[in-house]
Length: 395
Image (cartoon, rainbow, N blue to C red):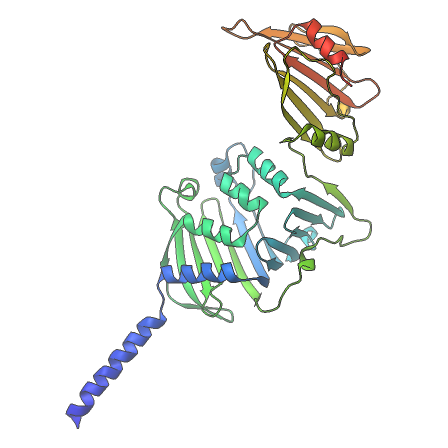
């Protein structure tokens, strides 16, 4: 009997060991499951708590030119998500009381930010946010993520910057999780910026989604933990349409703050909606061709601008106008070599300079347009008489 039972017991034990090994996925399998789940998730409702601290000196050394101070804080945020990039987030609790009620919404085309203290809603289109991020020297992949908060792409980018390994399984609140430990991938941008950083991600074994994360570096540390994770309740697209939370709230449209290339017809419309008339030349140097138009709306029309560029055998001509002369002052302080001239019935300024090691002379003519808030300028390798003739022909 013993001889009979021994092989059976051995087989049973071997089977249990194999089954046990099969229930513990590898780090790569967990990451793939997480990516697959995020990709197929149509909607989610999440409540998550954040807390963190910033080391001002280390952050300033990394960023350069900043004067950040040590700080710490916490917040509880309610999040709604819809494929592929619909997001709504509202602060429920915060260590800084004035942040409670603040909201951010991405409706697929525009990003809205609500400030309950000033009762102002700030609106910016995706391209505008990308442009502003570019001016701030934010890396291109992060520009794309800010302008298009696609969770699938964001997760892929994060994983592409890190190396990870499997840690011990742990219980996080009501969730039984797999633990993944992360460090920056050697040679990646993350490794050059945060070489000593380390992070941990706890992935729910049922949903394959992160329910807790921590990160530590010289520049600071942070933690997030999920208390509500609902993937089953469908969310209507109306959830992601921004509605003014309070009566009397005002909207500030930040879209188009940075100049963009557009057609001349589009520039005329942009100028009209920004409260000014786009001046266009009726006289141009022989052989001139319009090669580019760039325009921006400015902030509520103030600071709106347009630049037309023409090419000709004599050289490139540019014509610029900015709405809101109070932004530049009314004084006509002459630069070195500048001279006062009369243009379109007002006092203007003409200045010219020769390029080093080149026979080319570049000239600029500018003035405050009479009866408007426009500051107008034009320039190129042309004489004073030619620029004045072009200026007088603007309509």
